[in-house]
Image 1: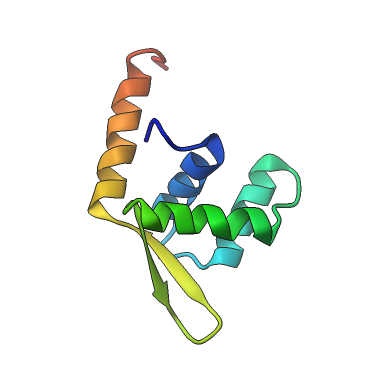
Image 2: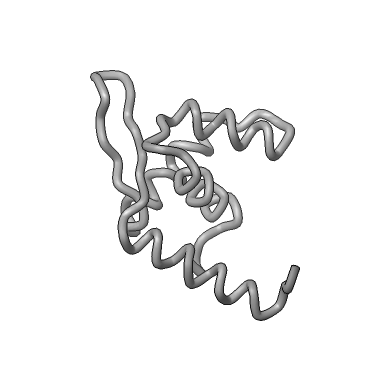
Length: 91
């Protein structure tokens, strides 16, 4: 997880919080959080990077719609990150 950008980590968290979200649903969640438009040219290459790293799986609903889900490795990476964060941030 250390080699991911903040945007890529945010993508992982959104995917973890939804059940097999499609790209547009992920985009909408991040636009709400960032309070600005997320361009396709930023979103999809970063999703592909997460797929290439084995953190996310990409499936196909129909010819035009893909969905994304975390792999076991992706879940482990999020859990490890949260444990690391808890060392420094105790709410």
